Structures are given as structure tokens and as C-alpha cells.
Amino acid sequence: MKEIKLFCPATIANLSCGFDVLGLCLDNAGDEMIVRKVDQKGVRITKIVGADLPLETEKNVSGVAALAMLETLDELDFGFEIEIYKNIKAGSGIGSSAASSAGAVFGINELLGRPYSRKDLVQFAMQGEKLASGNAHADNVAPALLGAFTLVRSYSPLDIIRIDSPEELYATVVHPQIELKTSDARSVLKQNVSLKSAIMQWGNVGGLVAGLYTKDYDLIGRSLHDEIVEPVRSVLIPGFDQIKQTAYENGALGSGISGSGPSIFALSRGKETAEKIAKAMSDVYEKMNLPYEIHVSKINPDGVRII
Image (cartoon, rainbow, N blue to C red; front, side, top):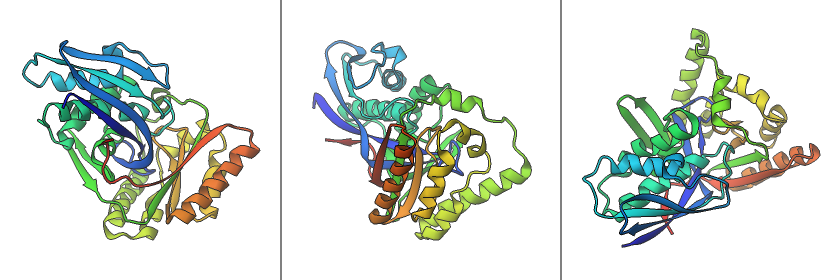
């Protein structure tokens, strides 16, 4: 196999209570990527369509992730070219950089005969995230590679748990067309939190994980509460409170900021409810005269896949 074409899915990170440790994989929003084996050594980004991003390997998240992976292998007498077809806007809050990072390492791993497992690939994809945001977080790249929900139990050593999604769970994500850089969204966060807030937050993390395992939709909804990050980040997102309230009024289990924003997500039981929420969210931004994109998606159980 000399060439591979991939679907690199969008993701929702944090999921309210799980800052930097929880994420899920979307099914119908994502980039496409072609990775090919070539005679010239190293990694080259040869084409990017849909976004103004650097072609230089060391300045592109997919290139940095790929190089991190190749550094761990015996020197190869061939190299790789990567073409990226971006459908996820940078700064959208649904894992644009993670899709590129995950796709690059997955594609190269396939062409090499899978020396690494999908879980092993997370550590390399994290280096792309470090370039994008200054922080090597895994809450987007882990679900992009593993599918379903993922929990980062520990970063040192890296310990990731994949959690299957309840069958009827759907995500609705609205992206107001403003860019909010992850690095800027991180800069507003407090470095210390109160014990009271911490106790409430880890109770919700435990509740959300338990809800996913037991398929308890009400428990999932009760646990989608962010005591720490959302209060300071939500002011950066136009119409956030109204969108969130609208989601609840139309049957959402819970709602919050997707990743670092500005996208806002809602989880619901059943496609019909998810689409009703999408219509209501759209109406809010229509009235505000703010351009937006909206996605309704099942939870993707597979992650990055060959197409």
C-alpha cells in the first residue's frame, strides 16, 4: 500500500466537567487527508485545501505529529507526503488541529504496517496539539483516534480509557462564525480553584462516566455541569447563555462549551430531539444576525477511518 485516504473526525472536548480529560468523537463532521509513501525521506505537506495553514512541516500540526512518531522508529529509507482537505475551521472548538494531527499519525502508521496501536498514536498526535495551543492535551486527539468517548485518567504516565457511547446519544454542535484561539481561551483560566468547586467538578466527572457505562441518560445530563471553566470562558462566546437555555428548553440532556469554544454543544437522547435543538439554536443566531454552522451527529465509535 503506497497511498491512503482518510476521514479525520471532529471532536468535542471537555464535555463541561472534564476539562483536558474528557472528549467524544463526531460522526459526520471532519477533514479528509491523503497520506502517501514516497522515495524522498522525511515528511512533506504538499497541499492544503480549505484553510490558510503553513505547508512547512515543522509549523504544521500534522507535520509535527508525524515527525514525533518517526523519531521513535529506526531510520526509514523512504518518506511521506500529506495532503489535507480542511472542513473543520481553525479555532472552531471542535478539534481542527486534532483531526490533522490524528490523521497524519494514523495514516503513516497504516502505511508502515501498524507498528503502533491507536492508543499508542495519541502521544504523537499530542505534539501537534502542543504546537497549536502550547499545551500537549489529549482530550481531542484521543477520541479522534479511538472513537466514542475517551477519558484521560493520567497524563504522566499517559493512561487513556475508551468508553462506548449509549446507542441513542446524539450531539448537536453550533459554531458561531468567530474564531477563538485555544491559546487565548486558556489565558483567561484561573490557575487555582476552590476545594468546594473541585469537589463538585470531580463528582460530575464520575457521574458522567457512570452514566455512559450504565446508559443512564438522566445521570449523563445531571453531570454535564462545569463549575470551573465555563463561567470564565462563556463571556467570550456571543449568545452563549441564550443558546444553552434554548437547548434545555428543547430537550437537551445538557449543554456547554465545545473545547475552548466558540462552538456550543448539546447532548440529547434520539436524533429527533437533536434536530429540534439544532433548529432552536439556529433561530437564536439568525435573530442575532450572526453567521453559524451547525452539526447533528451520532457518536462515532471508530475514530479516524480509511475511506
